[in-house]
Image (cartoon, rainbow, N blue to C red; front, side, top):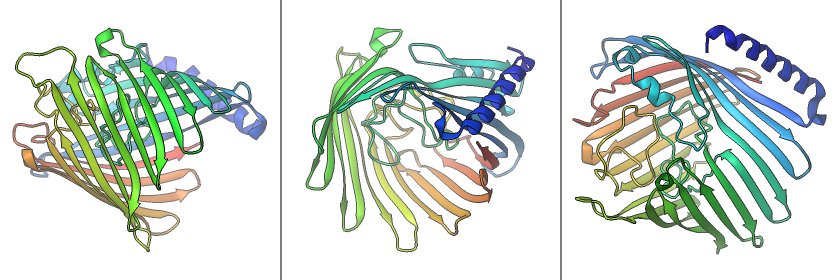
Length: 387
């Protein structure tokens, strides 16, 4: 696809936005989204050898209220990415453009030495609801995770903690049926087929509220492995107390590999009186070392049975709104078994209604012979207009 072929599409989008806003809440069609520019600089491990990078990001979220019980959702993003690394590793365009869903809805339409143009649809589903039933079919996000950093219970839609620009997170091609048994309990069945049957995911979740705790149990098939797990969310002394774990077991024995492994996370979160929200979370990743290290990009999501680049991870984060227009925060992750660490400070400022500016830095350190070793640091300033 040429760059010029995007112009008619952009005109259609602008017309649709104007029409939707003109009709207001009376229209069954709604279009929302944003445009974000994020220039940045990449530094090596010694904070030297600066190189420019960045991207232009546009997201579109479309909803059609077909009837009082049926909706159609279509959401996606368009990106233009720039990084000198693309010239050194040309296969990255295939990684960025890869779509593991049943239907390929990801396109790399621009590929130069240092430029990549990419579009994808990450939500495309029909939703129906009636009384205590909810049904969705199509590409959607099925979020079964409970903890706030890593989600071992999230069999369908793992995400990368390091991909800070993808707040919507990935979706999967699936059919999901939810049934609310009463005010305290629900049962949910989800099936995500794949081009290869060994890669499909199918699971059932039962959720219940018991003495102020939301608890859940899951059981299913995850890519030729049995998955059994559960989690909880409650509070202790005013602090949120959350945890989840999943045990995976190979249905077929593999040579030189343990058939079973556990992945578990437990965390506390607390809101201080002056408005600082903090998170402390511990992760045990029993799948680390099970597979050869196939990761090329830190921001690419891993799998729930091997959810981190290390066996252990400890994360501490704090966020605060200093005023209605100024916010800031910092996240620190330690990966002790590979002697690596990650630091991400951020500062946000609301320039005006629908226009926001943010500074974000990502600093990777240590991790000899791991993906962290040569990652260095990246420093970004973003400007986002929402419509």
